Image (tube, rainbow, N blue to C red; front, side):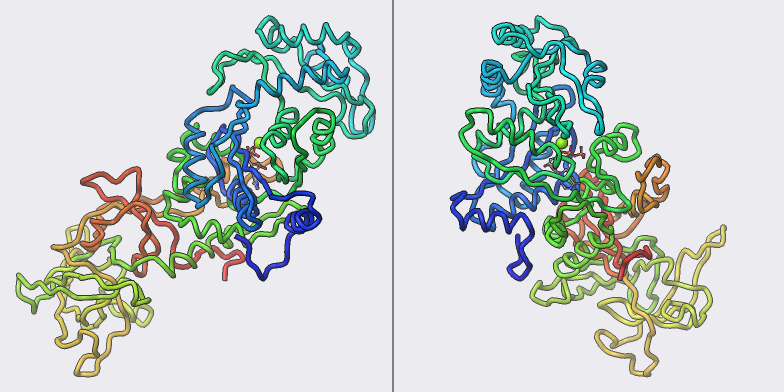
Length: 556
Ligand code: ATP
Ligand code: MG
């Protein structure tokens, strides 16, 4: 949602003046995904812009599937996109709409253009059509089929529709101007023959409308006032307007273009994302490393962090490259404020507190969050606990003065001070157990002998913790521009972008963790329960993000 203190961007300026001048009474925008893949972070920007404008100006935003290409589209994508838009926190007005709902109307308008002498059936094949089109510097030349009589064009269109013409043999083209300096206006294709079943219209059609012939007319049917797309469509705008001006459409929409969101260390092309999925480089579209909305959700990124990130971006007339650390900043900011704290030991080392009785059980009451309004939780404290292997050193040194070492003390987070006495090693020489003593009366206070611990470590009760598996993630690519120039983006995949830790120990309360509710595991980062791999007897947590970035780019 727009921040009242921010200057208006160029689209908001246009809308404000259109409303003021009475050019429109109510703003209507739309988000028009093609159901040929899952939504990614770039789409999130478009969603926030379109739904955000409707909210800001008290208008409507439609969700319309741009399902004009039967070959690549599937219902799976439709469902996933609907879920993602809702999860991001937006509600479209009216029903979900589909370009395919308008196939009948578009066909009638094609007949109308033919009867006005403004469209014709053309038998140039794809290669000839390219030849005839000319180049940016040379005009094209007229198709030999350009002057067919109206009746013949109408009959041929019908034959195309009925499947009597083979694919690639004929197209319907608008008759505009083969010499136009704008290549889009050189008799663009309106319909192609495609004998493919459509996910909604089945076998009803053997022709499908081109984007340019469909999009503006769909906007007009729906009463869309401001049709916002990305910059690569700027040169199609005159064509968008030509169809609107030459057809008896019920309203006059206008197209505006803004810069795509490109995120470094990432790719935002559905084709490339699909390749990552199809070739098994990731665990599906919702792999937590994917820049898809569903991947970010599975990773534990809150929707509000994505919205705040999108709102922080300029809506400008140039494409921009945004630093991944900017997205990460909004994720950390949101999680730090709202994620409850918990303790999980990723690489457990047993500590036996030998001066406590075997059956010692003390329920410590500790805050859920530094913001005390979030309440308290209980933490069972017992004779045997786990701390992280990294928090114990066989020998004390200045470098590790905040760690536990023989004869040295540390404070257990939210608990007592302990001092290590000795330790046990396995045959391979790894420390497998530390024996320690509890320093009495140190809950919330310093030791009476004034020998204060230097460090605080996280821990869990051995008996009352739950086993879990932890997936640590890093950026999927280790090149800031994985698909720039002629690079193969697959070469830039970060081989250590996923690290699976098993046998981790989570505090007992995390057995009740719910997917979608993030936690801060103290000293380790932000985590959430994985929706895909967790089962009734297996708990898996995804790392959403580390507490601090280890990357050295623009991070603060
Ligand atoms: P891709 O290039 O990934 O296939 P697309 O543009 O073909 O994306 P659509 O499903 O057609 O994908 O996109 C739906 C809407 O989202 C369009 O209005 C498009 O302009 C917008 N959009 C897509 N990618 C971005 C992006 N990176 N930044 C901003 N808007 C985007
Ligand atoms: Mg598209």
